[in-house]
Length: 162
Image 1 (spheres, rainbow, N blue to C red):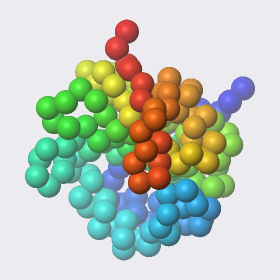
Image 2: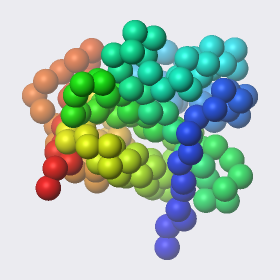
Image 3: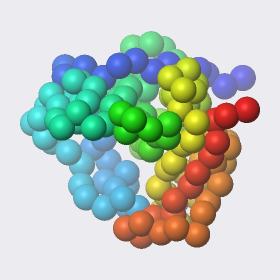
């Protein structure tokens, strides 16, 4: 039996713990960049917890993925929705130490359920062509790859209607 993770809203205070979760350089092999510092996350989270872009055109949903023990963060899931749209772009990251346990799929399914409840009808993810683990998560969410490439990543889409 697979252990079950939960998701909860991101808080500014999560920066310290998430800096540890996101510290492994392997997390950035396909996306580029480097592990964020605690101050970087503090600045980022101070904006994200408001739930909207500064210009008000997008809704931001940022959730911390919590381990089955309910005690520690193991990653995050997020969605960006245009205020006047019915689609969402989603992403997920699970810390290196917790990968391979189905946590990304569980957390992303919870996020997708929340999006469906908000009336979102289509989800989109951008995944590097060599990132087979994320491709597996996307397939389990019902997403399929398109022929569209953006910044070296394949656009995956799926419908929530039905």
